[in-house]
Image (cartoon, rainbow, N blue to C red; front, top):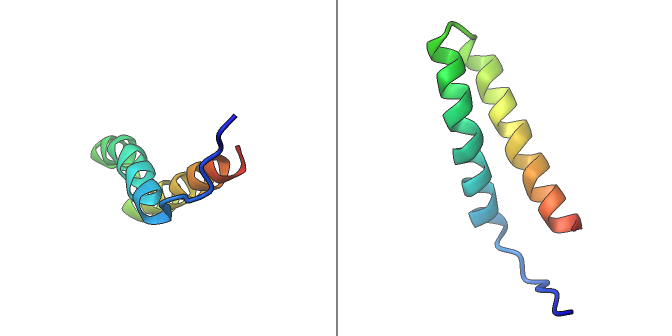
Length: 55
């Protein structure tokens, strides 16, 4: 099967960060610390890009 080895790292990071950011924005509106929310968003974006790259 064809495997695309040219990964758009920036595009993947932005897409994953936006997806995680929506959920953490809701969490901040419910009273969570913004710093914890940013950490969760960054971790989720990096994990999503790494999983995408490894699969």
